[in-house]
Image (cartoon, rainbow, N blue to C red; front, side, top):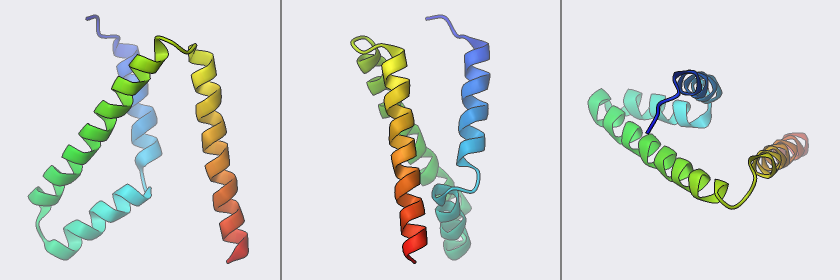
Length: 94
């Protein structure tokens, strides 16, 4: 298996920036603050993120064998846009 360092770096940067300040980070912050158990929260959160990333990568790899990358990117973009529109609708209702 060949490791593509450029892809590793771009994936890291994209995920790192996307995750900053999201609800996962806020939840981890709150758990660590309330429980004063940094190592336990770190291990639990890291395990959950590793598992969810493993599942996403495995499914992406499997689905990518049957569906062209362009179709997957368009579907992912449509899903993100849908969530964005739903979030905006909820914000305007409040």
